[in-house]
Image 1 (cartoon, rainbow, N blue to C red):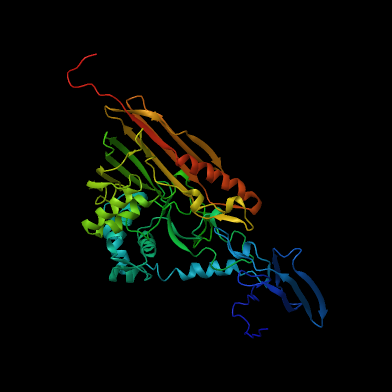
Image 2: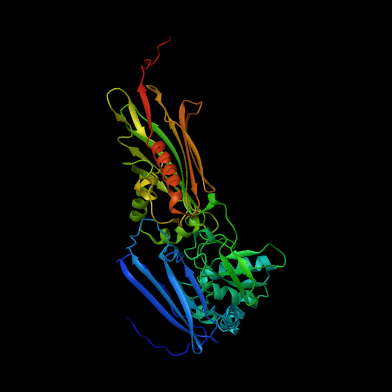
Length: 491
Protein backbone atom coordinates (compact mmCIF):
# COMPACT_ATOMS: atom_id res chain seq x y z
CA UNK A 1 0.00 0.00 0.00
CA UNK A 2 1.39 3.37 -0.96
CA UNK A 3 0.09 6.78 -0.03
CA UNK A 4 1.11 9.99 -1.72
CA UNK A 5 -0.12 13.53 -1.64
CA UNK A 6 0.56 16.15 -4.24
CA UNK A 7 -0.41 19.77 -4.68
CA UNK A 8 -2.74 20.76 -7.49
CA UNK A 9 -0.80 20.88 -10.77
CA UNK A 10 -0.01 24.44 -11.89
CA UNK A 11 -1.44 23.85 -15.37
CA UNK A 12 -4.65 22.33 -13.99
CA UNK A 13 -4.10 19.04 -15.84
CA UNK A 14 -4.63 16.20 -13.35
CA UNK A 15 -3.12 12.76 -13.95
CA UNK A 16 -3.44 10.05 -11.34
CA UNK A 17 -0.85 7.82 -12.99
CA UNK A 18 -1.31 4.41 -14.58
CA UNK A 19 -1.92 1.23 -12.60
CA UNK A 20 -0.93 -2.18 -13.98
CA UNK A 21 -2.78 -5.30 -12.84
CA UNK A 22 -0.05 -7.73 -13.93
CA UNK A 23 3.70 -7.57 -14.28
CA UNK A 24 6.71 -8.93 -16.16
CA UNK A 25 8.56 -9.30 -12.86
CA UNK A 26 6.27 -11.29 -10.58
CA UNK A 27 2.79 -12.86 -10.35
CA UNK A 28 0.02 -10.88 -8.65
CA UNK A 29 -2.35 -12.81 -6.39
CA UNK A 30 -4.46 -9.73 -5.88
CA UNK A 31 -4.12 -6.30 -7.48
CA UNK A 32 -6.55 -3.64 -6.27
CA UNK A 33 -6.83 0.03 -7.16
CA UNK A 34 -9.32 2.49 -5.67
CA UNK A 35 -9.79 6.08 -6.79
CA UNK A 36 -12.22 8.61 -5.34
CA UNK A 37 -12.92 11.17 -8.06
CA UNK A 38 -14.80 14.43 -7.24
CA UNK A 39 -17.81 14.64 -9.53
CA UNK A 40 -16.94 18.18 -10.61
CA UNK A 41 -13.43 17.08 -11.67
CA UNK A 42 -13.56 16.15 -15.41
CA UNK A 43 -11.27 13.12 -15.31
CA UNK A 44 -11.26 10.64 -18.17
CA UNK A 45 -10.89 6.94 -17.47
CA UNK A 46 -8.70 4.98 -19.89
CA UNK A 47 -8.77 1.19 -19.71
CA UNK A 48 -6.46 -0.98 -21.82
CA UNK A 49 -6.42 -4.78 -22.05
CA UNK A 50 -8.64 -4.93 -18.95
CA UNK A 51 -11.78 -6.57 -20.35
CA UNK A 52 -12.39 -9.95 -18.72
CA UNK A 53 -9.41 -9.43 -16.41
CA UNK A 54 -10.21 -6.46 -14.20
CA UNK A 55 -13.40 -6.10 -12.20
CA UNK A 56 -14.61 -2.49 -12.02
CA UNK A 57 -17.27 -1.28 -9.57
CA UNK A 58 -18.23 2.27 -8.72
CA UNK A 59 -20.52 4.00 -6.23
CA UNK A 60 -21.34 7.53 -5.15
CA UNK A 61 -19.90 8.69 -1.86
CA UNK A 62 -20.86 12.26 -1.05
CA UNK A 63 -19.55 14.57 -3.78
CA UNK A 64 -17.28 11.91 -5.25
CA UNK A 65 -17.51 8.76 -7.31
CA UNK A 66 -15.47 5.90 -5.87
CA UNK A 67 -14.03 3.51 -8.44
CA UNK A 68 -12.82 0.10 -7.30
CA UNK A 69 -10.72 -2.05 -9.63
CA UNK A 70 -9.52 -5.56 -8.81
CA UNK A 71 -7.80 -8.41 -10.62
CA UNK A 72 -7.05 -11.82 -9.08
CA UNK A 73 -4.46 -14.50 -9.74
CA UNK A 74 -2.59 -12.78 -12.55
CA UNK A 75 0.48 -14.79 -13.64
CA UNK A 76 3.83 -13.24 -14.33
CA UNK A 77 3.85 -12.06 -17.94
CA UNK A 78 7.27 -12.92 -19.32
CA UNK A 79 8.53 -10.54 -21.97
CA UNK A 80 9.45 -11.81 -25.44
CA UNK A 81 11.89 -10.53 -28.06
CA UNK A 82 10.40 -7.85 -30.28
CA UNK A 83 7.43 -7.35 -27.99
CA UNK A 84 5.93 -3.85 -28.11
CA UNK A 85 5.90 -1.65 -24.99
CA UNK A 86 4.06 -3.24 -22.08
CA UNK A 87 1.18 -0.75 -22.36
CA UNK A 88 0.19 -2.62 -25.54
CA UNK A 89 -0.44 -5.94 -23.78
CA UNK A 90 -0.58 -5.67 -19.99
CA UNK A 91 -3.93 -4.75 -18.35
CA UNK A 92 -3.87 -1.21 -16.95
CA UNK A 93 -6.05 1.81 -16.21
CA UNK A 94 -5.45 5.51 -15.69
CA UNK A 95 -7.52 8.53 -14.73
CA UNK A 96 -6.46 11.83 -16.20
CA UNK A 97 -7.12 14.89 -18.33
CA UNK A 98 -6.02 15.86 -21.79
CA UNK A 99 -3.44 18.61 -21.92
CA UNK A 100 -4.61 21.98 -23.24
CA UNK A 101 -2.92 21.48 -26.59
CA UNK A 102 -3.95 24.80 -28.22
CA UNK A 103 -2.64 26.67 -25.20
CA UNK A 104 0.57 24.66 -25.25
CA UNK A 105 1.13 25.30 -28.96
CA UNK A 106 0.60 29.00 -28.41
CA UNK A 107 3.18 28.85 -25.63
CA UNK A 108 5.61 27.00 -27.91
CA UNK A 109 5.17 29.65 -30.60
CA UNK A 110 5.81 32.44 -28.11
CA UNK A 111 8.81 30.57 -26.74
CA UNK A 112 10.51 30.58 -30.15
CA UNK A 113 10.38 34.37 -30.52
CA UNK A 114 13.38 35.20 -28.38
CA UNK A 115 15.79 32.55 -29.76
CA UNK A 116 14.92 33.54 -33.36
CA UNK A 117 15.01 37.29 -32.77
CA UNK A 118 16.59 39.22 -35.63
CA UNK A 119 19.28 41.13 -33.77
CA UNK A 120 21.58 43.60 -35.54
CA UNK A 121 24.24 40.87 -35.72
CA UNK A 122 21.83 38.41 -37.32
CA UNK A 123 20.58 41.00 -39.81
CA UNK A 124 24.12 42.01 -40.76
CA UNK A 125 25.10 38.39 -41.36
CA UNK A 126 22.01 37.73 -43.48
CA UNK A 127 22.50 40.91 -45.52
CA UNK A 128 26.09 39.95 -46.24
CA UNK A 129 25.19 36.42 -47.35
CA UNK A 130 22.30 37.37 -49.66
CA UNK A 131 23.84 40.50 -51.12
CA UNK A 132 23.30 40.28 -54.87
CA UNK A 133 21.37 36.98 -54.55
CA UNK A 134 17.98 37.19 -56.26
CA UNK A 135 14.92 35.13 -55.35
CA UNK A 136 13.69 33.40 -52.22
CA UNK A 137 14.98 29.94 -53.05
CA UNK A 138 18.45 31.14 -54.00
CA UNK A 139 18.63 33.15 -50.78
CA UNK A 140 17.43 30.20 -48.71
CA UNK A 141 20.11 27.98 -50.23
CA UNK A 142 22.83 30.56 -49.62
CA UNK A 143 21.80 31.00 -45.99
CA UNK A 144 21.64 27.22 -45.51
CA UNK A 145 25.23 26.89 -46.71
CA UNK A 146 26.24 29.74 -44.41
CA UNK A 147 24.78 28.06 -41.31
CA UNK A 148 26.73 24.89 -42.04
CA UNK A 149 29.96 26.89 -42.01
CA UNK A 150 29.08 29.33 -39.21
CA UNK A 151 28.77 26.76 -36.41
CA UNK A 152 31.59 24.67 -35.01
CA UNK A 153 29.29 22.82 -32.65
CA UNK A 154 25.55 22.20 -32.40
CA UNK A 155 23.86 23.19 -29.16
CA UNK A 156 20.77 24.96 -27.81
CA UNK A 157 21.86 28.59 -27.82
CA UNK A 158 19.65 31.06 -29.69
CA UNK A 159 20.44 32.65 -33.03
CA UNK A 160 22.48 35.64 -31.86
CA UNK A 161 24.51 33.64 -29.34
CA UNK A 162 25.09 30.89 -31.90
CA UNK A 163 26.30 33.37 -34.46
CA UNK A 164 28.68 35.09 -32.05
CA UNK A 165 29.94 31.99 -30.24
CA UNK A 166 29.86 29.57 -33.22
CA UNK A 167 27.88 27.13 -31.09
CA UNK A 168 24.11 26.82 -30.91
CA UNK A 169 20.88 25.62 -32.45
CA UNK A 170 21.36 25.53 -36.21
CA UNK A 171 17.61 25.40 -36.97
CA UNK A 172 16.97 28.46 -34.82
CA UNK A 173 19.84 30.35 -36.43
CA UNK A 174 18.63 29.43 -39.90
CA UNK A 175 15.09 30.57 -39.07
CA UNK A 176 16.37 33.94 -37.82
CA UNK A 177 18.50 34.45 -40.93
CA UNK A 178 15.54 33.57 -43.18
CA UNK A 179 13.43 36.08 -41.28
CA UNK A 180 16.07 38.76 -41.76
CA UNK A 181 16.20 37.98 -45.49
CA UNK A 182 12.38 38.01 -45.83
CA UNK A 183 12.21 34.37 -46.99
CA UNK A 184 8.90 32.69 -45.96
CA UNK A 185 9.49 29.84 -43.54
CA UNK A 186 8.37 28.21 -40.32
CA UNK A 187 9.99 26.14 -37.63
CA UNK A 188 8.47 22.67 -37.44
CA UNK A 189 8.44 20.36 -34.44
CA UNK A 190 8.13 16.73 -35.49
CA UNK A 191 7.22 13.66 -33.45
CA UNK A 192 10.33 12.12 -34.99
CA UNK A 193 8.85 8.69 -35.72
CA UNK A 194 6.71 7.29 -38.53
CA UNK A 195 3.14 6.39 -37.52
CA UNK A 196 3.68 2.69 -38.24
CA UNK A 197 6.83 2.68 -36.08
CA UNK A 198 5.41 4.71 -33.18
CA UNK A 199 5.73 2.83 -29.87
CA UNK A 200 2.72 4.83 -28.60
CA UNK A 201 0.38 4.99 -31.60
CA UNK A 202 -2.71 5.69 -29.49
CA UNK A 203 -1.75 7.91 -26.55
CA UNK A 204 -4.29 7.70 -23.71
CA UNK A 205 -4.24 11.47 -23.26
CA UNK A 206 -3.32 14.49 -25.35
CA UNK A 207 0.24 15.37 -24.35
CA UNK A 208 2.09 18.67 -24.43
CA UNK A 209 5.34 17.13 -25.64
CA UNK A 210 3.81 14.96 -28.36
CA UNK A 211 5.59 16.73 -31.22
CA UNK A 212 8.72 18.09 -29.53
CA UNK A 213 11.22 15.45 -30.63
CA UNK A 214 12.83 16.82 -33.77
CA UNK A 215 13.15 20.47 -34.84
CA UNK A 216 13.09 21.15 -38.59
CA UNK A 217 12.79 24.21 -40.79
CA UNK A 218 10.18 24.37 -43.56
CA UNK A 219 11.19 26.90 -46.19
CA UNK A 220 8.36 28.04 -48.46
CA UNK A 221 9.95 30.28 -51.10
CA UNK A 222 7.62 32.35 -53.25
CA UNK A 223 9.55 31.29 -56.35
CA UNK A 224 10.13 27.59 -55.65
CA UNK A 225 8.92 24.40 -54.06
CA UNK A 226 8.73 23.99 -50.27
CA UNK A 227 11.90 22.55 -48.75
CA UNK A 228 12.14 20.64 -45.48
CA UNK A 229 15.55 21.19 -43.89
CA UNK A 230 17.27 19.29 -41.10
CA UNK A 231 20.05 21.41 -39.62
CA UNK A 232 21.15 18.91 -36.99
CA UNK A 233 23.77 17.67 -39.43
CA UNK A 234 26.12 20.05 -41.19
CA UNK A 235 26.33 17.67 -44.16
CA UNK A 236 22.64 17.40 -45.09
CA UNK A 237 22.00 19.65 -48.11
CA UNK A 238 19.16 22.13 -48.47
CA UNK A 239 15.83 20.32 -48.75
CA UNK A 240 17.23 16.92 -47.71
CA UNK A 241 15.90 14.99 -44.71
CA UNK A 242 16.97 11.72 -43.21
CA UNK A 243 14.34 9.23 -44.34
CA UNK A 244 14.10 7.66 -40.89
CA UNK A 245 10.70 9.12 -39.94
CA UNK A 246 8.61 9.71 -43.08
CA UNK A 247 5.04 10.72 -42.37
CA UNK A 248 5.77 11.69 -38.78
CA UNK A 249 3.13 14.05 -37.29
CA UNK A 250 4.43 17.60 -37.05
CA UNK A 251 3.30 21.11 -36.14
CA UNK A 252 4.53 24.36 -37.70
CA UNK A 253 5.20 27.45 -35.62
CA UNK A 254 4.00 30.11 -35.26
CA UNK A 255 1.01 29.20 -37.49
CA UNK A 256 0.29 25.99 -35.51
CA UNK A 257 -0.54 24.16 -38.74
CA UNK A 258 -0.73 20.40 -38.36
CA UNK A 259 1.61 18.78 -40.91
CA UNK A 260 3.32 15.50 -41.65
CA UNK A 261 6.97 15.02 -42.53
CA UNK A 262 7.21 14.20 -46.27
CA UNK A 263 6.71 10.58 -47.21
CA UNK A 264 9.58 8.46 -48.52
CA UNK A 265 9.42 5.16 -50.41
CA UNK A 266 10.22 2.11 -48.33
CA UNK A 267 13.11 1.33 -50.68
CA UNK A 268 14.70 4.69 -49.81
CA UNK A 269 15.04 4.24 -46.05
CA UNK A 270 18.53 4.65 -44.54
CA UNK A 271 20.69 1.72 -45.60
CA UNK A 272 23.79 0.67 -47.54
CA UNK A 273 23.44 -0.81 -51.00
CA UNK A 274 26.26 -2.87 -52.50
CA UNK A 275 27.57 -3.66 -55.99
CA UNK A 276 30.17 -6.37 -56.35
CA UNK A 277 32.41 -7.70 -59.12
CA UNK A 278 34.06 -11.04 -58.30
CA UNK A 279 36.74 -12.79 -60.36
CA UNK A 280 37.37 -16.21 -58.80
CA UNK A 281 40.43 -18.28 -59.67
CA UNK A 282 40.76 -22.04 -59.98
CA UNK A 283 42.75 -22.11 -56.73
CA UNK A 284 39.68 -20.85 -54.84
CA UNK A 285 40.82 -17.29 -54.32
CA UNK A 286 39.09 -14.27 -55.85
CA UNK A 287 39.71 -10.66 -56.75
CA UNK A 288 36.85 -8.44 -55.61
CA UNK A 289 35.82 -4.94 -56.60
CA UNK A 290 33.07 -3.52 -54.40
CA UNK A 291 31.03 -0.34 -54.12
CA UNK A 292 28.92 0.65 -51.14
CA UNK A 293 26.25 3.29 -51.68
CA UNK A 294 24.72 4.74 -48.50
CA UNK A 295 21.30 6.30 -49.02
CA UNK A 296 18.19 7.53 -47.26
CA UNK A 297 20.31 10.38 -45.85
CA UNK A 298 23.28 8.27 -44.77
CA UNK A 299 25.14 9.41 -47.89
CA UNK A 300 25.40 12.81 -46.22
CA UNK A 301 25.47 11.94 -42.51
CA UNK A 302 28.47 9.61 -42.75
CA UNK A 303 30.60 12.40 -44.20
CA UNK A 304 30.85 14.23 -40.88
CA UNK A 305 32.53 11.46 -38.93
CA UNK A 306 34.66 10.19 -41.80
CA UNK A 307 36.10 13.61 -42.63
CA UNK A 308 37.71 13.80 -39.20
CA UNK A 309 38.75 10.14 -38.98
CA UNK A 310 42.40 9.06 -39.40
CA UNK A 311 43.26 7.26 -42.62
CA UNK A 312 43.91 3.99 -40.78
CA UNK A 313 40.50 4.13 -39.11
CA UNK A 314 38.80 4.76 -42.46
CA UNK A 315 40.57 1.77 -44.00
CA UNK A 316 39.55 -0.48 -41.11
CA UNK A 317 35.95 0.72 -41.44
CA UNK A 318 35.95 0.04 -45.20
CA UNK A 319 37.53 -3.36 -44.60
CA UNK A 320 34.78 -4.32 -42.14
CA UNK A 321 32.09 -2.94 -44.43
CA UNK A 322 33.16 -5.02 -47.42
CA UNK A 323 33.88 -8.09 -45.29
CA UNK A 324 30.11 -8.45 -44.84
CA UNK A 325 30.02 -9.26 -48.56
CA UNK A 326 33.33 -11.06 -48.98
CA UNK A 327 34.56 -12.51 -45.66
CA UNK A 328 38.34 -12.48 -45.42
CA UNK A 329 38.88 -9.73 -47.98
CA UNK A 330 42.24 -7.94 -47.78
CA UNK A 331 41.71 -4.47 -49.21
CA UNK A 332 44.52 -3.23 -51.42
CA UNK A 333 42.69 -0.04 -52.41
CA UNK A 334 39.80 2.00 -51.11
CA UNK A 335 38.38 5.39 -52.04
CA UNK A 336 35.54 7.59 -50.76
CA UNK A 337 34.23 9.67 -53.67
CA UNK A 338 32.18 12.64 -52.48
CA UNK A 339 33.76 12.79 -49.03
CA UNK A 340 35.18 16.30 -49.49
CA UNK A 341 32.60 17.69 -51.95
CA UNK A 342 29.65 19.39 -50.24
CA UNK A 343 27.11 18.67 -52.99
CA UNK A 344 28.21 15.14 -53.93
CA UNK A 345 26.78 12.14 -52.04
CA UNK A 346 29.25 9.78 -50.44
CA UNK A 347 30.10 6.40 -51.92
CA UNK A 348 32.75 3.91 -50.84
CA UNK A 349 34.75 1.80 -53.29
CA UNK A 350 37.28 -0.90 -52.59
CA UNK A 351 39.33 -3.62 -54.22
CA UNK A 352 41.08 -6.58 -52.71
CA UNK A 353 41.76 -10.27 -52.64
CA UNK A 354 39.87 -13.00 -50.82
CA UNK A 355 42.29 -15.91 -50.26
CA UNK A 356 39.53 -18.48 -49.85
CA UNK A 357 36.42 -17.44 -51.75
CA UNK A 358 35.60 -20.95 -53.01
CA UNK A 359 35.47 -24.06 -50.84
CA UNK A 360 36.77 -27.30 -52.38
CA UNK A 361 35.03 -30.51 -51.29
CA UNK A 362 36.97 -32.66 -53.76
CA UNK A 363 34.10 -32.80 -56.25
CA UNK A 364 33.26 -29.15 -56.84
CA UNK A 365 34.04 -25.63 -55.74
CA UNK A 366 31.33 -23.73 -53.92
CA UNK A 367 30.66 -20.45 -52.15
CA UNK A 368 27.96 -18.75 -50.19
CA UNK A 369 26.08 -15.96 -51.91
CA UNK A 370 28.09 -12.72 -51.97
CA UNK A 371 25.46 -10.68 -50.12
CA UNK A 372 25.37 -9.28 -46.57
CA UNK A 373 23.81 -11.94 -44.32
CA UNK A 374 20.24 -11.26 -43.24
CA UNK A 375 19.69 -14.05 -40.69
CA UNK A 376 16.07 -13.02 -40.33
CA UNK A 377 15.25 -15.98 -38.13
CA UNK A 378 17.91 -15.07 -35.58
CA UNK A 379 17.43 -11.31 -35.81
CA UNK A 380 13.66 -11.00 -36.15
CA UNK A 381 11.97 -14.32 -35.54
CA UNK A 382 12.28 -17.33 -33.28
CA UNK A 383 10.33 -19.71 -31.09
CA UNK A 384 9.32 -21.95 -34.00
CA UNK A 385 6.42 -19.67 -34.82
CA UNK A 386 4.86 -19.78 -31.36
CA UNK A 387 4.27 -16.60 -29.41
CA UNK A 388 2.14 -15.25 -26.55
CA UNK A 389 2.64 -11.51 -26.99
CA UNK A 390 2.15 -9.16 -29.92
CA UNK A 391 5.13 -8.62 -32.23
CA UNK A 392 6.49 -5.19 -33.10
CA UNK A 393 9.16 -4.33 -35.67
CA UNK A 394 9.79 -0.56 -35.31
CA UNK A 395 12.76 -0.33 -37.68
CA UNK A 396 12.52 -1.14 -41.39
CA UNK A 397 14.85 -3.72 -42.91
CA UNK A 398 16.05 -2.49 -46.30
CA UNK A 399 19.08 -3.66 -48.29
CA UNK A 400 19.84 -4.10 -52.01
CA UNK A 401 22.84 -5.99 -53.41
CA UNK A 402 23.90 -6.74 -56.99
CA UNK A 403 26.87 -8.99 -57.63
CA UNK A 404 28.50 -10.43 -60.75
CA UNK A 405 30.80 -13.42 -60.64
CA UNK A 406 32.98 -13.59 -63.76
CA UNK A 407 34.02 -17.20 -64.42
CA UNK A 408 37.58 -17.64 -65.70
CA UNK A 409 38.65 -20.40 -68.10
CA UNK A 410 38.71 -23.63 -66.18
CA UNK A 411 35.56 -23.02 -64.15
CA UNK A 412 31.94 -23.65 -65.14
CA UNK A 413 28.59 -23.55 -63.40
CA UNK A 414 27.65 -26.83 -61.79
CA UNK A 415 24.61 -25.75 -59.78
CA UNK A 416 22.91 -22.46 -58.95
CA UNK A 417 20.72 -21.85 -55.92
CA UNK A 418 17.01 -21.41 -56.53
CA UNK A 419 15.60 -17.90 -56.49
CA UNK A 420 12.78 -16.67 -54.29
CA UNK A 421 10.22 -13.87 -54.34
CA UNK A 422 7.94 -13.15 -51.38
CA UNK A 423 5.75 -10.27 -50.23
CA UNK A 424 5.12 -9.28 -46.63
CA UNK A 425 3.03 -6.45 -45.14
CA UNK A 426 3.74 -4.03 -47.98
CA UNK A 427 7.35 -5.17 -48.21
CA UNK A 428 9.11 -7.71 -50.36
CA UNK A 429 12.05 -10.08 -50.67
CA UNK A 430 13.63 -11.08 -53.95
CA UNK A 431 16.62 -13.29 -54.74
CA UNK A 432 17.76 -14.37 -58.18
CA UNK A 433 20.94 -16.23 -59.18
CA UNK A 434 21.21 -16.66 -62.94
CA UNK A 435 23.75 -16.84 -65.78
CA UNK A 436 24.24 -13.33 -67.15
CA UNK A 437 24.79 -14.41 -70.76
CA UNK A 438 28.35 -13.09 -70.78
CA UNK A 439 30.21 -15.93 -69.12
CA UNK A 440 29.30 -14.93 -65.61
CA UNK A 441 26.69 -15.27 -62.88
CA UNK A 442 24.41 -12.44 -61.78
CA UNK A 443 23.22 -12.36 -58.16
CA UNK A 444 20.46 -9.93 -57.28
CA UNK A 445 19.07 -9.61 -53.75
CA UNK A 446 16.39 -7.15 -52.59
CA UNK A 447 14.82 -6.95 -49.15
CA UNK A 448 12.51 -4.19 -47.94
CA UNK A 449 10.38 -4.77 -44.85
CA UNK A 450 8.42 -1.87 -43.35
CA UNK A 451 7.77 -1.38 -39.64
CA UNK A 452 4.74 -3.41 -38.57
CA UNK A 453 2.89 -4.88 -35.60
CA UNK A 454 1.29 -8.33 -35.38
CA UNK A 455 -1.02 -10.06 -32.98
CA UNK A 456 0.47 -13.22 -31.51
CA UNK A 457 -1.81 -15.41 -33.60
CA UNK A 458 -0.45 -13.94 -36.83
CA UNK A 459 3.20 -14.40 -35.89
CA UNK A 460 3.57 -17.90 -37.34
CA UNK A 461 3.15 -16.52 -40.85
CA UNK A 462 6.00 -14.06 -40.31
CA UNK A 463 8.22 -16.77 -38.84
CA UNK A 464 7.54 -18.87 -41.94
CA UNK A 465 8.45 -15.89 -44.16
CA UNK A 466 11.76 -15.54 -42.31
CA UNK A 467 12.44 -19.26 -42.53
CA UNK A 468 11.89 -19.29 -46.30
CA UNK A 469 14.21 -16.30 -46.75
CA UNK A 470 16.94 -17.84 -44.58
CA UNK A 471 16.69 -21.14 -46.45
CA UNK A 472 17.11 -19.33 -49.77
CA UNK A 473 20.09 -17.37 -48.42
CA UNK A 474 21.83 -20.59 -47.35
CA UNK A 475 21.93 -21.79 -50.95
CA UNK A 476 25.43 -22.35 -52.29
CA UNK A 477 26.74 -21.58 -55.72
CA UNK A 478 28.64 -24.62 -57.08
CA UNK A 479 31.27 -24.59 -59.80
CA UNK A 480 33.15 -27.38 -61.51
CA UNK A 481 36.65 -27.42 -62.96
CA UNK A 482 36.87 -27.89 -66.70
CA UNK A 483 39.73 -28.70 -69.02
CA UNK A 484 41.55 -25.65 -70.36
CA UNK A 485 43.01 -25.72 -73.83
CA UNK A 486 46.72 -24.90 -73.87
CA UNK A 487 47.73 -21.64 -75.59
CA UNK A 488 47.82 -21.91 -79.38
CA UNK A 489 45.89 -25.18 -79.53
CA UNK A 490 42.93 -25.55 -81.90
CA UNK A 491 39.96 -27.89 -81.86
